[in-house]
Length: 186
Image (cartoon, rainbow, N blue to C red; front, side):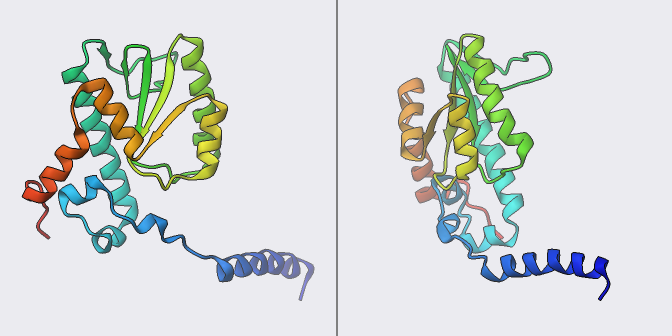
């Protein structure tokens, strides 16, 4: 083999070892109250996890924005600070960013978690993340900590929502699941 082939083979060998030892965490296979409201099974979600994650994330954001807008007298839409829009909406001094879950660890996203939190504090706000799920990427959570974000996940998120809005979103979603109001038919 040539030197070039040797060098390239080293790269492939490293990845071959990584691919061989990769173990997938089944924590991501749990359903959640939003999935259940639509009747989305893990089997259906696994057909295209990226699609379902993106769409459920956008649905979560829209639900929360509309709920806070309808119930909070001090609701404000997203604000621009220069070219950045570091939160989905504001409720009083809370700058709220909604996440279905965080599974992306690209460096640009991670840097924004830290810098946006600091920017919001500098502007007099309390940066708050509202996660539906609890299976979030640890590297992302660490960067959020570095940006001084307050993070609510799972049931803690629903408690925060109920305290701020007076509406029990979790119970409402459970009711919809039982009634099959929005169950998808595929």
